[in-house]
Amino acid sequence: MIEVNHLKKEFKIPVQKKGRFSAVRNLFSSEHTIKRAVDDITFSVGDGEIVGFIGKNGAGKTTLIRMIAGLATPSSGSIELFGSSDLVKERAKIGTVIESPALFPNMTARENLITQCRIANVKDLRVVDETLELVGLSNTGKKKAKNFSLGMRQRLAIAIALIGDPEFLILDEPTNGLDPEGIKEIRDLILHLNQEKHITVLISSHILSELSKFATRYGIIHNGSLIEEFTEEELWKRCISENGQEFGLEEYFLKVIGGK
Image (cartoon, rainbow, N blue to C red; front, side, top):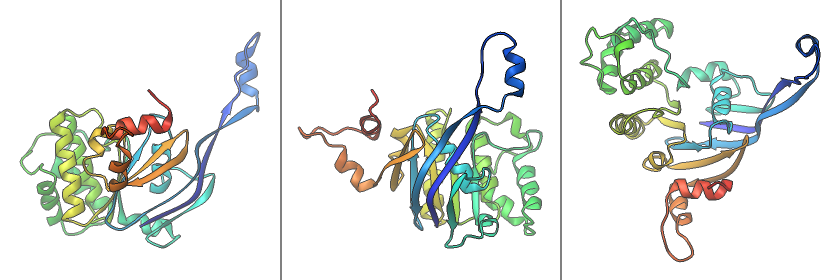
C-alpha cells in the first residue's frame, strides 16, 4: 500500500544573533542551521495492516505522515502509493485525519459530510447517512459540530476522511485528549474499519497502552529516525524480561529510546 524509501525532511532555522542592533541584523541575516525532522526513513505498509508509529512529541511522526499525505514536500527520498509514483492520482484512495479535525463548526454532522461529498465530487449522497451510521453520529440531528464533544469531533473527522471510500486511512493522534470512553469508541471504530471494511490503517500515537490493543505492527520513531520495527507477535516476545516478568509497550518504548 505504501513504500517509503530514504525519506528526509529538512528545515532551515535562522541563526538568531544577540547584542546591539540584533533585531535588525537578524532581519537581514542569511545565516541558518539545518534541522532534520525526518532522517532517512524507509518502511512499507502492507494491505490490511494496522501500523502504529510510536514516538515522543517532536520525534517526526507528524512530519512523516504529512509528507505521505501530500501536505509537506520531502527534501529527498521517494514515496510510492499502491505501487505507483503518481502520488496525486493515488492519494485519492487515502483518507486522512492529521492534527486538529478540519470541520465546519457551524454545520451539523450531516451538512459537514454533504459538503465533503461536493468537494470530493461524490454524487450519491446516500453515502452520507451510511457513514454517519458507521461512525455512530446518525442521531446528532441539528446539533452543530462546534457543540460536539472532542470524541464526537474526532469521529466526524474520520467520517469526512471516509467520504470517497478510501482503501487506506492515515490517523495522527486520533485519541489525543479523549476520555476513556472516547478512546474506546475510536479504537472500536478503527478495528471495525479494518476488519469489516478492509481498510488499511497507519496511525501515530503516544498513548502506547491504547495502541498496543489493536495495532498489528509498530515502528518506533526517535529524533527523526525509524529506529525499530516489529510485529504484534514480536512485541510480546520482547516484553518479557530475563527473569520472565512481563511488561508493556510503554516500558519497552522507553527502554529502546533510553528514557525513564
